[in-house]
Amino acid sequence: MARPAISGQRHILRALAQWPKDPVRPEIQLQDVLRKRFEQNTNLPEQEQLRQANALYSLLDNRYKKKYVITGSLLRPKSNPTYFTDLVKELEEAPSRSWFDRLMLRLKGVVRIS
Image (tube, rainbow, N blue to C red; front, top):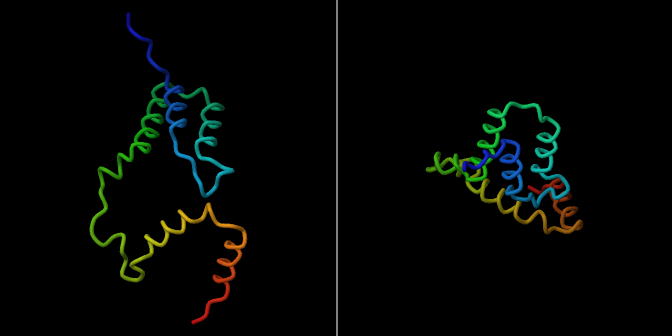
């Protein structure tokens, strides 16, 4: 006996359940916003739901990062070679900062000594 096909809606919800949590903005998660959108819009054709589920799975698997590998000096611009490494470092440190650390960083950004 053949198994029934899994609907596009279930594929989408399964992909959103695997989506990683955002530590920078824990109060607003992308998967929650998308889940509400897909639950409200149930009149999409099955083919469109499957296409959107495929897009979510491809983003989860980093399919495009693997297919289009960034090489060379693209991540090290001549004007600021450490820009992208500093950006990743800031994003990793941001969730664990206290309010005082955030205030001090804001004040350092306002007052620049050159």
